[in-house]
Image (cartoon, rainbow, N blue to C red; front, top):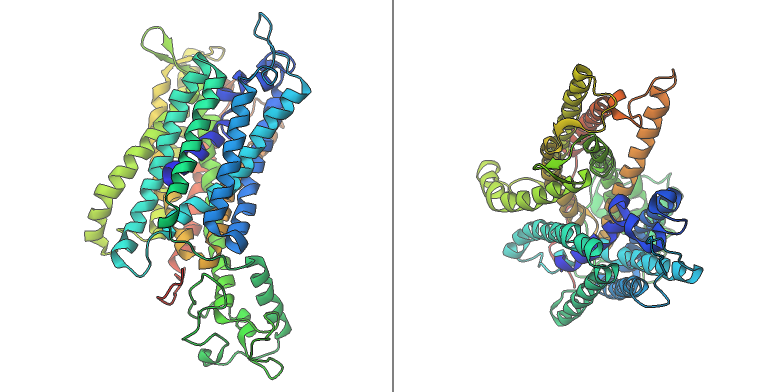
Length: 547
């Protein structure tokens, strides 16, 4: 299951994270006006539009999964769409008539139809991604029986190994597939992952009879608005001190929300409890209107979502700093000595491989060494609570930014001391960046995997896909925040005619200041998260769960 997700995610990443690695070699984009350098507008708009689409479609996929289709059928349909998208891309790079014609100088001239076919393939992948990403980790966790203690303990390890397999796929994509696309052909570069994805889909369907499937619970947005409307209608009604008087189905009955366990009442956000107060105008029978009277479980769903929002917000700052790996870390590396040995030079963007290696190694160490040790110290069944795990990752990210800032400070001191201002590559090895990539990888293992587990466990049963999708949107919002911060810093730091913090020639700038600022924002984010997590009430459910 996790390997299936890996194939989907790494293919999307090739189009959304690092255009300097993949897009400049793509004939449909590179050569529309000549060479790659001649069409930055097409490159940037294509990448940003596709990334935006891949950020929005998971919300649609999650809504369909939780409301009507269920996670199994959402993954099944989306994976087929994804395979078609990959197949179209492979055909656009190999079939005569779909593949652009190129001249002796390797400048290609795609027709409008060829460009259209290329974009159809891309956006079919984006559409398929929308149903896969928010559902597959939750669906994998669904296979563990909540009533079985041993299976419940194994669920935490599942998220670790799931994330490990995603990064193994990313490692293969960033090395083997990139080499094939660069040195063999794009037809093979697209064809191999398309075939692998098709095999993964067949593998997924082969286990159909073995899967546990949770029934979709209907539109979560409808239930949320029903609680709000009913609460406002009864705004003058007093909530009884005896909370057992609040409306809920009997103990022998299932929850009115299909596929969901009943939730125990909590005292937070008590205004919404008014929606469960039984009045004389309410009819407690089969025809009761949910727009006037809601169950305690339905109200607690809304409370859970509101309680998750501050935790979601903490991820925005995290991903704003995390996104520097594909932006400012690369620019910083470009100013350093790129030699590995005497003659071989490596692209600075390739150092992100150390992040992937860090994640892979840290997952193994965390699952096999840290968790058993932490269990003996804390007594917690998973070593750390989910929020503690997220918090450790947020703290590690602060050190990653401090590490990057310190490196840039030392680099600028060397520039100033030896007057290297016009030197393209300062004689400082780019491998000094490895620690900051490695620390971010460790932070990723704690925070990102912790978020996967946390939003699965703490989300209402009938909203798990939706909450996973909301968690994914924090990555997009973090990237947008990073762009906003860069724009503000550039505008403010250049007002008096100076070079600014992030000029074209970083030797005249102060990139270290930007990293210090991110470290400060990350520290503030950690402080706020600590206060929120300290008072966060974990949800309480009844033990019986109906599949």
